[in-house]
Amino acid sequence: MINVKEILDKLGIQEINNGVSTGAEWFEPAGAITNSVSPIDGKEIAKVKNATMEDYEMVVAKAQAAFKVWRTVPAPVRGEVVRQIGEALRKYKHELGALVTLEMGKIYQEGLGEVQEMIDICDFAVGQARLINGVSLQSERPQHRLFEQYQPLGLVGIVTSYNFPVAVWAWNSALAIAAGDVVIWKPSSKTPITAIATQKIIRDVLIANNVPEGVFNLIVAKSSVMGDNFIADKRIPLMSVTGSTAVGKRVGGIVGKRLGKTILELGGNNAVIITPDADIPMAIASTVFGTVGTAGQRCTTTRRVIIHESIYEEVKNKMVAAYGKITPKIGNPLDENFLVGPLIDKGSVDLFLNAVSSVEKEGGKVLIGGQVMEGKGFESGNFVMPCIAEAENHFHIVQEETFAPIVYLLKYSGDINNAVAINNAVPQGLSSACFTLNIREAETFLSAVGSDCGIANINVGTSGAEIGGAFGGEKDTGGGRESGSDAWKAYMRRQTSTVNYSADLPLAQGIKFDL
Image 1 (tube, rainbow, N blue to C red):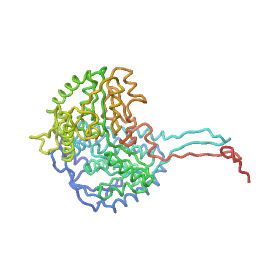
Image 2: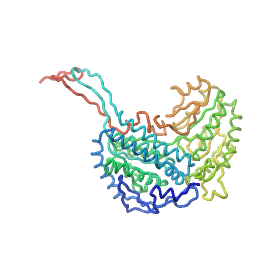
Image 3: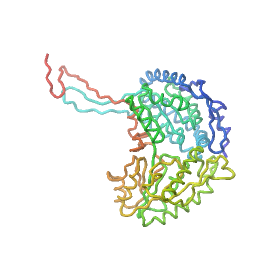
Image 4: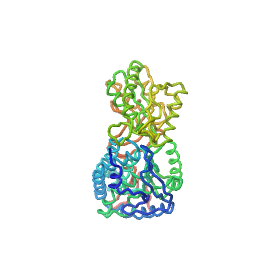
């Protein structure tokens, strides 16, 4: 078992921690002191002093001053700082991964995986720092050069969720910093300690490279104190927010009123299609991980399994059997013998139980699971038995995202187009997958008439994402993209430029204006 005290000591976590930093410097805020409690056993991890609006104003002022300097630093030099941050994260991978597990509740292997995502995006951003490129265009005017370029945008606000308490910060900050921006990070109030630990990990890198105070900012504060004030702040041109669809709609409305920019990573209601031509053992293994990994608290968690009627009973029985094997694997996620940890808190447990009750009320059938775990090791009340339920896609509860380990089995008949129609018939559009060895089915699923999600996989589940590919979804998922491809452009302002190197002044479109 992991030694928690040793982990906290190595990461510099104290009994009471300041929740405001501008990089290397820490400040003692004047806000309330709150406790971070582990969902594993309900015990306190540490306390945090929260920020006030006065603290926030100080941070913004430092960020504004820092941006004026940081934007002038050559991009490859900025990338070198990000590279060193990746190395620092490598050094503390095991400790930070364990803290993610302790504070969030995902199993230790997933905690390590989250830190690895941070390292990977740093590697990606290092390369990107040398590839911030524009486009040369052909001017209609002689001896004119027409081109596009990208410039640093300014202050970037980052609001992260508890389920990936540090990786999503890295997705955003690594690209933003390489682009020449500065970041203000407001972590989830449910997981502030991992954020504080991360800020402490990067401190030596910032000092060694003379990074100005105000480039990397952390501010732990209650949403009631700085939520709307942060989002509505015109000094922050870009807000990147990860959360529920309801939160995203609120953020989009507030930022939109000031004509600011947003990157929104919101809810998913992800489906797996299993066709008669699927490799069923592969489909089962992948889907089970997709449904119970992180105790169903991933935005890419598999929520619906769409199964052809000819193989429905076979797939159903095998999934139920697999879930039966999971039951003894539910427990303390710090112990590597367990595969499923707790939900984040009692509120999430209530949402889970409500979903189980709702699907039955609407005419569905619970096949396995749906209970709160009891007994030794489950005293926190946050552990649940993952649930499989038969349902229909039109059920109200199926149309919603329940951020917990409940999956709905749906039956389809006919060809792949009917399955795709079910996949697309929800408000969300994040991740999707189709298991088939039939090339026609696979290509149809990936075509313009196929999945309407931002992520569409063949013989790979819905859960998880690789750094390098743009992550995000459509419809109620928000439309934002992070962590790869050309997502870096969202953190920059686009500029079209014309240079006249002739001795004449021809106008566009051949317009004559002679004085």
